[in-house]
Image 1: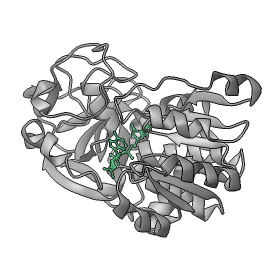
Image 2: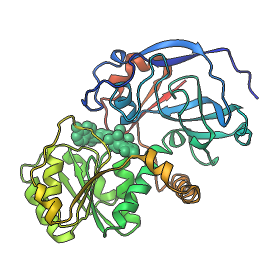
Image 3: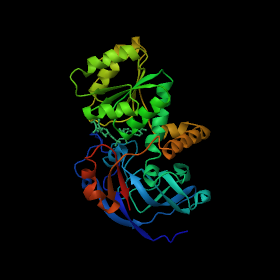
Image 4: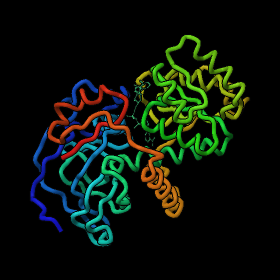
Length: 342
Ligand SMILES: NC(=O)c1ccc[n+]([C@@H]2O[C@H](COP(=O)([O-])OP(=O)(O)OC[C@H]3O[C@@H](n4cnc5c(N)ncnc54)[C@H](OP(=O)(O)O)[C@@H]3O)[C@@H](O)[C@H]2O)c1
């Protein structure tokens, strides 16, 4: 095993607990929420591993989290960052099987934006050699969510609606939908995304700023009868789209990219049309899906990245030591992931 230093560089949370706000993932300056620090390298406890970071990815959930708006509280002075890829350099009792392996991980002990990360062995996926470090760093959160949510869509018919379809997750779901013979209806903010998304598999692409968007959507909805709306934007326009969907439609909110809070205009549809509003969180999916089923999904995800059907679009590379000063600027390019390297 590699020599492990006593201390390490880490990007630390400056906030504690929840903020009580819901302002969305956008930031203007990461130093409002993060600071550089030199802290002790964590020690893996029973069932845990210590990982030397290769690459960490930046997801909207990281931004919600550092702002105190995510499903778990911040811990002041702990490293930020949820997802990445690296090498297991030490193991706690019961996790010896991962020793020396290159793994994709979700950080569940200390954050990913640090030279070393501690997490549970169950939150690690050993990576096939034909998966790149960058694909490995974005191998869990979005790909597993894409698989799980398209499964929900498939259970309700062949057409489904995806908002923020230019997101990494949106693109994965369009491609998966096409591969399964489904008809993804993609909603985007930028007109230049129409053709690329059609190439990826969207049956229809609508631009949310088009003044006729709702009229166009209503027509498509009447023809294709989408019964599931996989929504990462969750604003007033989302509510209007849901209102234009057919009976038994499910509005599945899984992200809050827009800070606008929707109000419900058609409560009667829940009563008389059997429509439902619900949420999806991968963490719950992982806690409730039997390990054998998760294993099959993980194998399918790796096969898709290995054979090139899926890839992670990268918009910027950011050295770990420049995260606090450079993250807000790096996030301005929205057509891919920011990748952090030690
Ligand atoms: N619930 C879960 O378990 C779960 C799991 C994974 C991901 N998610 C959520 O899934 C969503 C996508 O994640 P990702 O990692 O794929 O994102 P991403 O690749 O970082 O892309 C986010 C995209 O959203 C678009 N966007 C940003 N602000 C927007 C707004 N106000 N309105 C409409 N579109 C906006 C931007 O595209 P343009 O600039 O091209 O418009 C941007 O490219 C996020 O909300 C994330 O939190 C949830």
